[in-house]
Image (cartoon, rainbow, N blue to C red; front, side, top):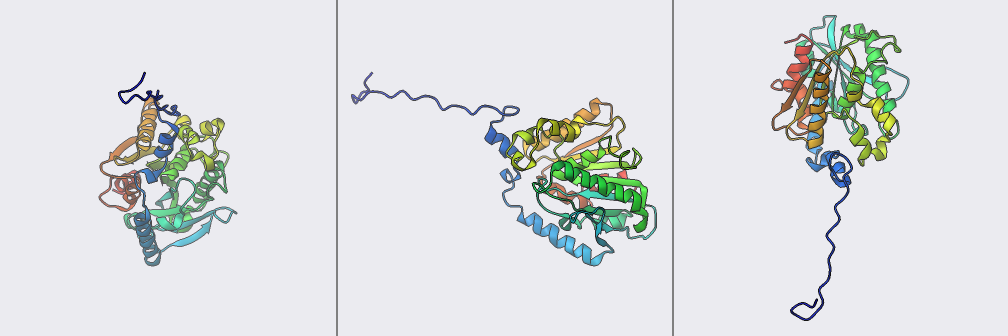
Length: 306
């Protein structure tokens, strides 16, 4: 049919919608949900602050740096004993984030100050990063770090019967994998070696990670997803557990924490779960060193130091 100007009309097909990949997200939308730059495009301010305060703490506090817990060059710990110098103090093992592929323990000495002052040892772990290592290997290394602490905590005043784990982002995922059953007996540890865990802004179901652009370097298949997802491996006996996330995080990260908490509750476990108002993904890491933060209070309370 001609138009008023006399030229024929063109039939324009509607734009095709991208097929959903996961929970209604298109591929581009899912990739954005697992890319922190979507909400915080420049993290340099956080990294600069963490690095500067961490360097100050290493200069000002008693510490043992890059203590080997295994044979690999990345398998080292920074240990910050409690200030009081007494033996038998609780020990907190921290597992850093960085999407499994970035950062190191060197940026995370800064929480040692409030922990040491409260009477706890702070231990920051290094480990191999993806894609040079597999995620299975990264989990194995952190389990080996925990086993080393079990055997050597007394050497820096720690109590092997008071071991705790905390982690942020991908480190929270690995911390959740430490809580899983099945590995401690093989390592010669008692099943209750971990007395508590504080997991912050983590991923506990790796299926959407497998389907996202992150899988270019995480390299998960469906079997690995089941093996390495804490939400699919909830132990019958759970240590004290607290989950935190920020209201300013990506929707998928908020959902991941809520879903993990709900799974734990459905299995009859008592777990603390809290959303921190106004906090983005990187603000949440500051909570380990902030006296006003529920994260630090949860850690110290879990260890009996409040």
